[in-house]
Length: 248
Image (cartoon, rainbow, N blue to C red; front, side, top):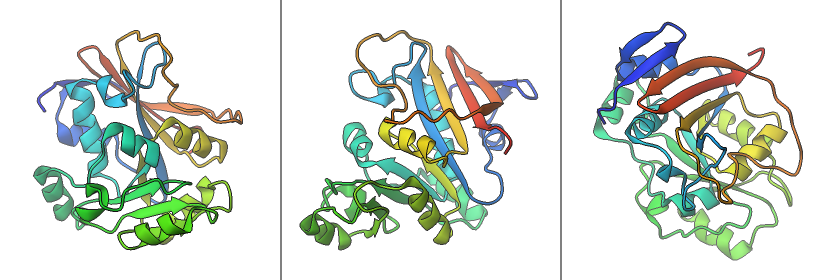
Protein backbone atom coordinates (compact mmCIF):
# COMPACT_ATOMS: atom_id res chain seq x y z
CA UNK A 1 0.00 0.00 0.00
CA UNK A 2 1.64 3.21 -1.17
CA UNK A 3 -0.71 5.92 0.13
CA UNK A 4 1.37 8.76 1.60
CA UNK A 5 0.53 9.62 5.19
CA UNK A 6 1.59 12.79 6.99
CA UNK A 7 1.58 13.53 10.70
CA UNK A 8 -0.21 16.74 11.68
CA UNK A 9 0.21 16.38 15.46
CA UNK A 10 2.33 15.87 17.51
CA UNK A 11 5.71 16.36 15.80
CA UNK A 12 4.43 17.33 12.32
CA UNK A 13 6.04 15.51 9.41
CA UNK A 14 5.19 15.81 5.71
CA UNK A 15 5.50 12.07 5.14
CA UNK A 16 5.99 9.20 7.55
CA UNK A 17 6.89 5.63 6.69
CA UNK A 18 5.57 2.44 8.26
CA UNK A 19 7.99 2.72 11.19
CA UNK A 20 6.79 6.25 11.83
CA UNK A 21 3.17 5.11 11.83
CA UNK A 22 3.97 2.22 14.16
CA UNK A 23 5.79 4.57 16.53
CA UNK A 24 2.83 6.95 16.52
CA UNK A 25 0.50 4.11 17.52
CA UNK A 26 2.85 2.19 19.81
CA UNK A 27 1.17 0.32 22.67
CA UNK A 28 2.23 1.44 26.16
CA UNK A 29 3.61 -1.13 28.57
CA UNK A 30 1.18 -3.35 30.40
CA UNK A 31 -2.44 -4.29 29.62
CA UNK A 32 -4.12 -2.01 27.06
CA UNK A 33 -7.33 -2.29 25.05
CA UNK A 34 -7.58 -0.42 21.77
CA UNK A 35 -10.63 -0.02 19.53
CA UNK A 36 -10.20 0.63 15.81
CA UNK A 37 -13.03 2.06 13.68
CA UNK A 38 -13.77 4.05 10.55
CA UNK A 39 -16.59 6.56 10.30
CA UNK A 40 -17.96 9.01 7.76
CA UNK A 41 -18.01 12.67 8.79
CA UNK A 42 -21.77 12.45 9.41
CA UNK A 43 -21.28 9.50 11.77
CA UNK A 44 -22.00 6.42 9.65
CA UNK A 45 -20.02 3.33 10.66
CA UNK A 46 -20.75 1.43 7.42
CA UNK A 47 -21.56 1.85 3.74
CA UNK A 48 -23.91 -0.77 2.32
CA UNK A 49 -23.50 -2.75 5.55
CA UNK A 50 -19.70 -2.91 5.61
CA UNK A 51 -17.20 -0.68 7.36
CA UNK A 52 -14.46 -1.59 4.88
CA UNK A 53 -16.30 0.27 2.13
CA UNK A 54 -15.73 3.62 3.86
CA UNK A 55 -11.92 3.64 4.01
CA UNK A 56 -9.37 4.13 1.25
CA UNK A 57 -5.87 2.78 0.67
CA UNK A 58 -4.38 4.73 3.57
CA UNK A 59 -7.02 3.38 5.95
CA UNK A 60 -6.21 -0.16 4.88
CA UNK A 61 -2.50 0.53 5.37
CA UNK A 62 -3.01 1.81 8.92
CA UNK A 63 -5.45 -1.04 9.61
CA UNK A 64 -2.80 -3.64 8.77
CA UNK A 65 -0.08 -1.83 10.72
CA UNK A 66 -2.23 -1.64 13.85
CA UNK A 67 -2.77 -5.40 13.71
CA UNK A 68 0.98 -5.92 13.49
CA UNK A 69 1.57 -4.65 17.03
CA UNK A 70 -1.19 -6.63 18.73
CA UNK A 71 -1.04 -9.74 20.88
CA UNK A 72 -4.70 -10.47 20.14
CA UNK A 73 -7.37 -9.24 17.71
CA UNK A 74 -10.80 -9.08 19.37
CA UNK A 75 -13.91 -8.98 17.16
CA UNK A 76 -17.62 -9.57 17.60
CA UNK A 77 -19.14 -12.48 15.67
CA UNK A 78 -21.53 -10.17 13.80
CA UNK A 79 -18.62 -8.17 12.43
CA UNK A 80 -16.78 -11.37 11.49
CA UNK A 81 -19.79 -12.44 9.42
CA UNK A 82 -20.57 -9.02 7.92
CA UNK A 83 -16.99 -8.19 6.92
CA UNK A 84 -16.08 -11.67 5.69
CA UNK A 85 -13.21 -12.38 8.08
CA UNK A 86 -10.97 -15.36 7.46
CA UNK A 87 -8.12 -16.76 9.52
CA UNK A 88 -6.06 -14.19 11.44
CA UNK A 89 -2.94 -14.32 9.28
CA UNK A 90 -0.71 -11.31 8.70
CA UNK A 91 1.23 -10.41 5.58
CA UNK A 92 4.84 -11.72 5.25
CA UNK A 93 6.40 -8.34 6.05
CA UNK A 94 4.37 -8.13 9.24
CA UNK A 95 5.40 -11.68 10.20
CA UNK A 96 9.05 -10.74 9.69
CA UNK A 97 8.58 -7.59 11.81
CA UNK A 98 7.09 -9.64 14.64
CA UNK A 99 9.81 -12.32 14.46
CA UNK A 100 12.46 -9.62 14.84
CA UNK A 101 10.79 -8.58 18.11
CA UNK A 102 10.40 -12.14 19.45
CA UNK A 103 6.63 -11.99 19.04
CA UNK A 104 4.47 -14.87 17.77
CA UNK A 105 4.21 -14.70 13.99
CA UNK A 106 0.49 -13.92 14.11
CA UNK A 107 -1.77 -12.43 16.78
CA UNK A 108 -4.35 -14.64 18.42
CA UNK A 109 -7.90 -14.23 17.12
CA UNK A 110 -10.53 -13.78 19.86
CA UNK A 111 -14.23 -13.66 19.00
CA UNK A 112 -17.26 -12.60 21.02
CA UNK A 113 -20.54 -14.47 20.52
CA UNK A 114 -23.30 -14.90 23.07
CA UNK A 115 -25.19 -17.30 20.78
CA UNK A 116 -22.09 -19.10 19.40
CA UNK A 117 -23.45 -18.51 15.88
CA UNK A 118 -20.12 -19.33 14.26
CA UNK A 119 -19.17 -21.98 11.73
CA UNK A 120 -16.46 -24.29 13.11
CA UNK A 121 -15.63 -25.33 9.52
CA UNK A 122 -14.85 -21.77 8.39
CA UNK A 123 -11.34 -20.57 7.62
CA UNK A 124 -11.44 -18.52 10.82
CA UNK A 125 -10.87 -21.80 12.65
CA UNK A 126 -9.58 -24.37 10.15
CA UNK A 127 -6.77 -22.14 8.84
CA UNK A 128 -5.94 -20.41 12.12
CA UNK A 129 -2.19 -20.19 12.86
CA UNK A 130 -3.00 -19.94 16.58
CA UNK A 131 -5.92 -21.59 18.33
CA UNK A 132 -8.70 -18.95 18.45
CA UNK A 133 -10.62 -17.99 21.58
CA UNK A 134 -14.40 -17.62 21.63
CA UNK A 135 -15.96 -15.69 24.51
CA UNK A 136 -19.57 -16.50 25.25
CA UNK A 137 -22.08 -16.85 28.09
CA UNK A 138 -22.84 -19.90 30.21
CA UNK A 139 -26.35 -20.14 28.71
CA UNK A 140 -25.05 -20.52 25.13
CA UNK A 141 -26.36 -23.57 23.21
CA UNK A 142 -24.57 -26.74 24.32
CA UNK A 143 -24.38 -28.26 20.82
CA UNK A 144 -22.69 -25.19 19.37
CA UNK A 145 -20.33 -25.05 22.33
CA UNK A 146 -19.29 -28.66 21.74
CA UNK A 147 -18.70 -28.12 18.03
CA UNK A 148 -16.62 -24.97 18.53
CA UNK A 149 -14.63 -26.48 21.39
CA UNK A 150 -12.99 -28.80 18.88
CA UNK A 151 -11.39 -25.84 17.06
CA UNK A 152 -11.19 -23.05 19.67
CA UNK A 153 -10.99 -22.31 23.39
CA UNK A 154 -14.59 -21.53 24.35
CA UNK A 155 -14.64 -19.36 27.47
CA UNK A 156 -17.62 -18.25 29.53
CA UNK A 157 -17.50 -14.54 30.32
CA UNK A 158 -20.83 -14.06 32.02
CA UNK A 159 -24.07 -15.89 32.70
CA UNK A 160 -26.72 -14.39 30.40
CA UNK A 161 -24.89 -11.20 29.42
CA UNK A 162 -21.26 -11.09 28.37
CA UNK A 163 -19.03 -9.17 30.77
CA UNK A 164 -16.32 -7.16 28.93
CA UNK A 165 -14.21 -6.92 32.10
CA UNK A 166 -14.09 -10.73 32.28
CA UNK A 167 -13.01 -10.91 28.62
CA UNK A 168 -10.23 -8.43 29.19
CA UNK A 169 -9.09 -10.12 32.42
CA UNK A 170 -8.94 -13.54 30.74
CA UNK A 171 -6.89 -12.21 27.82
CA UNK A 172 -4.42 -10.55 30.20
CA UNK A 173 -4.19 -13.76 32.24
CA UNK A 174 -3.15 -15.53 29.02
CA UNK A 175 -0.33 -13.01 28.56
CA UNK A 176 -2.20 -11.24 25.73
CA UNK A 177 -1.67 -7.72 27.06
CA UNK A 178 -2.03 -5.70 23.88
CA UNK A 179 -5.65 -6.09 22.83
CA UNK A 180 -6.71 -4.66 19.47
CA UNK A 181 -10.45 -4.72 18.80
CA UNK A 182 -12.14 -4.13 15.46
CA UNK A 183 -15.70 -3.98 16.77
CA UNK A 184 -18.44 -3.97 15.96
CA UNK A 185 -20.57 -1.20 17.46
CA UNK A 186 -22.27 -3.44 20.04
CA UNK A 187 -18.92 -4.73 21.28
CA UNK A 188 -17.53 -1.20 21.42
CA UNK A 189 -20.56 0.12 23.31
CA UNK A 190 -20.47 -2.67 25.87
CA UNK A 191 -16.76 -2.16 26.52
CA UNK A 192 -17.26 1.60 26.93
CA UNK A 193 -20.07 0.96 29.42
CA UNK A 194 -17.79 -1.44 31.33
CA UNK A 195 -14.98 1.13 31.50
CA UNK A 196 -12.67 -1.23 29.61
CA UNK A 197 -11.56 0.96 26.67
CA UNK A 198 -8.14 2.63 26.85
CA UNK A 199 -7.86 3.91 23.29
CA UNK A 200 -9.78 4.64 20.10
CA UNK A 201 -8.11 4.75 16.70
CA UNK A 202 -10.63 6.43 14.39
CA UNK A 203 -10.34 6.90 10.65
CA UNK A 204 -12.53 9.81 9.57
CA UNK A 205 -13.54 9.23 5.96
CA UNK A 206 -14.30 12.42 4.04
CA UNK A 207 -17.82 11.51 2.96
CA UNK A 208 -21.45 12.10 3.86
CA UNK A 209 -23.50 8.91 3.94
CA UNK A 210 -26.97 9.63 5.41
CA UNK A 211 -29.08 6.45 5.46
CA UNK A 212 -29.63 4.26 8.49
CA UNK A 213 -26.09 3.10 9.25
CA UNK A 214 -25.09 2.52 12.89
CA UNK A 215 -22.79 4.75 14.87
CA UNK A 216 -19.43 3.18 15.73
CA UNK A 217 -20.78 2.31 19.19
CA UNK A 218 -24.14 1.62 20.74
CA UNK A 219 -25.29 0.45 24.16
CA UNK A 220 -28.47 0.57 26.25
CA UNK A 221 -26.50 2.53 28.83
CA UNK A 222 -24.81 5.90 28.41
CA UNK A 223 -21.23 5.96 29.68
CA UNK A 224 -19.53 9.34 29.08
CA UNK A 225 -15.78 8.74 28.93
CA UNK A 226 -13.32 11.62 28.55
CA UNK A 227 -10.60 11.04 25.96
CA UNK A 228 -7.43 12.98 25.08
CA UNK A 229 -6.12 13.41 21.53
CA UNK A 230 -2.79 11.58 21.23
CA UNK A 231 -2.11 11.90 17.48
CA UNK A 232 -3.53 13.19 14.20
CA UNK A 233 -2.44 11.81 10.81
CA UNK A 234 -3.68 12.69 7.34
CA UNK A 235 -3.68 11.02 3.92
CA UNK A 236 -5.45 12.64 0.99
CA UNK A 237 -8.98 13.29 2.36
CA UNK A 238 -8.79 10.94 5.34
CA UNK A 239 -7.91 11.84 8.91
CA UNK A 240 -6.55 9.33 11.42
CA UNK A 241 -7.32 10.27 15.02
CA UNK A 242 -5.78 8.54 18.01
CA UNK A 243 -7.52 9.10 21.34
CA UNK A 244 -6.48 7.74 24.74
CA UNK A 245 -8.52 7.76 27.91
CA UNK A 246 -7.98 10.95 29.88
CA UNK A 247 -5.55 10.52 32.74
CA UNK A 248 -3.77 7.42 31.33
